[in-house]
Every structure is written in structure tokens, then in C-alpha cells.
Amino acid sequence: MAASFDPVREDLFTFGLWTVGNPGRDPFGDAVRPVQDPNHLVRKLAEIGAYGVNLHDNDLVPFGASASEQARIVGEFKKTLADTGMKVPMATTNLFTHPVFKDGAFTSNDPKVRAFALQKTMRAMDLGAELGAKIFVFWGGREGCEADACRDPRTAWQRMRESMDFLCGYAKDQDYGMRFALEAKPNEPRGDLYLPTTGHMLHFISTLEHHEMVGVNPEVAHEVMAGLSFAHNVAQAMACDKLFHIDLNGQKIGRYDQDLRFGSEDQKGAFLLVRLLEGTLGGKRYEGPRHFDAHAYRSEDEAGVWEFAKGCMRTYKILHARAKAFDQDAEVRQLIAEQKDAALDPLLAGGFSRQKADALKAASIDVDAAAKRGLGYERLDQLLVEHLLGVRS
Image (cartoon, rainbow, N blue to C red; front, side):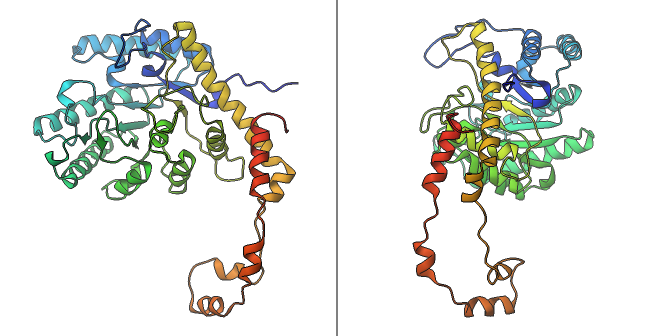
């Protein structure tokens, strides 16, 4: 019986309201699709096998809505979630659309803006907690500059640090049980963003008061924009136990942030990422939601939006199946089998000792023989390509 790549709830696939609800507007053209009601989007996502839906505060509640209007909107949304069984694993704050954030939110030179950013974020955390979200993502889309002389970058980092420490304290005080996930991006919409890569974020987290409750939310497009290996960045986050959430999409290297359908570009990179997340090589598997932060082409009507969403999920599952087959291939396993040396292995594990140092300095190592040994990586890479193309199983 042929494998089914249709998504099911257990796959933990999620989408943002802003993804399937994207009307196709871009800097050069107006919307091509009508704005959709959030409840309709949730029902459609449930129909096609998604596990959950994520949101910015203003994706659900319009900016400036009254308390009574917010209560009505949130009440209807909670009923839709209950009717469909859909979850809200993650929430976030829009700190980039309103003109007040034109020079940053947490890093703005204006204390009124910084205070408003904290106020807006606390209210968004309240909303997220009400909907059951346990992950809160921070994407600092305006936390950057064009005129770099406007502030000392160290001041910007300190302001961000103080904001994160404050909001961690708020989450703990409210007993929300939330963890924070910081999302990096090198540029756009600002000329330069202050914490441009996952590696920058990981170090920044180590400086926080409540660093144990803060991790990262890497996005494919944001790392590939800078020409980086997304799988390597995700692996670093996983090795640090800091991969709290992940944004999946497609991206052509060196372009603007495209947010393409997952796996529609760089299939090898997508394959290696899924292999890593699913642990098919034997490493620890990522257990969190697989969130698609992407949107349909501007050429599409609403039917095309749902083809886009189904395509993201099916491609992930296809790549998962290909990765399992690759890592179970006997020839692949032979090529990547760990090399053993009974004399040297004990000296290379377990850290320093004076005895190990003396033994290593005295060891006789035939470097010419080691240099001449072919590693077979051409064959290994060809096997990867053949598995990816489906001609080897």
C-alpha cells in the first residue's frame, strides 16, 4: 500500500492567521484576495489536517478595538477553536506595522514608544494565554537602523535586554507558563537589524536574567537571505536546547524575504532540515509544532491558498519519508559509519587530563596515510540526490 502524505493532527503542523490570510498585497501592488475572517481560516485549516493556528494580536483583534469589541471577537474565536479542535500553540505581537514603530519598538529612542511596546506586548501575552499559547515569539522587525549614527548599538541591545527581562518577569508573575522564542533576521524592513542571525540571538539570550525561559524561533528565509545554512543554525539551537519554535518556508538565496511554500526552493536544504528535525539519523527529535510562516503566490485566488497550505504539509511529510529511507540505506550507513581507533578514542573523550595530554603528544600518527584516504562523500551526496529524487528506496 502506497504511503499517504496527507497531513493529520499528530503531525503538529501549524499556520499563522497572517499566512493563509495573506491577501497578496506587496510593495508594488494592491491586494488580489479579500481579507478573510479568522474563524473561516481556522475552519479551513482544520479541514485540511492542520493541528493549530498562530497569531499576532492584531491578526485577530483590530488595532484600537474597544474592550467590548475585543471580548466579542475573542469569544467567537474561542468557540471556533473548540468546535474544530484546533490549538493555538504560539502567539506574538505586531510591533512593526503602526507608524509609531518606525524607529523601533523596544529599541526606540523615544521612551513613550518603548513604554507603548511593552504595554502592547503584555496585552498580547494576555490574549495568547487566554487562547492557550505556551510559546510567545518576538520578531523585532523594526529593531534596527538605516542611519546608524542615531544610537549606540550597545544602547539598543541594552534596551532589548531590559525589555525581555521585564516581559519574562511579567509572564512569571502572571503564571502563564510561557516560554519566549526570539526570531532573527539580517535586514528588511530595516536596513540592518540588531540581532541578525540565530547565533546572535543565542548569545543575547545568555545575557538575560531569565535565560532559561528564552529560546529561538529560526526561520528558513531569514537565514538563507544571509547565505547561511539553515540546518546548521537549527542544529546549533537544538544542541543548546534552545529550539522553542520554528518557521518553515522557502527562499531563494540573496533575495528579499519571499516566504515561499515550504520545499519549493532548495529541496536539498529542506531535506537536510527535515532529516535533522525528525531525528532520522539518530539524534534527538524536535517535538514542537512545525509552523509554516509562508504565503501563497500573488497569482492565486482562495482555492490556491489552500493548495499552498496543503503543499507545505505534504512536502514536509514526503521529505520525512525520503530522509528515513536515506538513513536506513545500508550503503549510506556504511559511508557515514563512525571511524574507531582503540588507541586514540579514549584520549579524545572526557576532557583534559595531564596523562591524556602527554599520551597525545607522544602518539605516533601517520598523517600522510590519513591525508590520502578518500572519504566517499561524492558517492554519499549522489545517494542523497537519488533518494531525494525518488529513484532509490
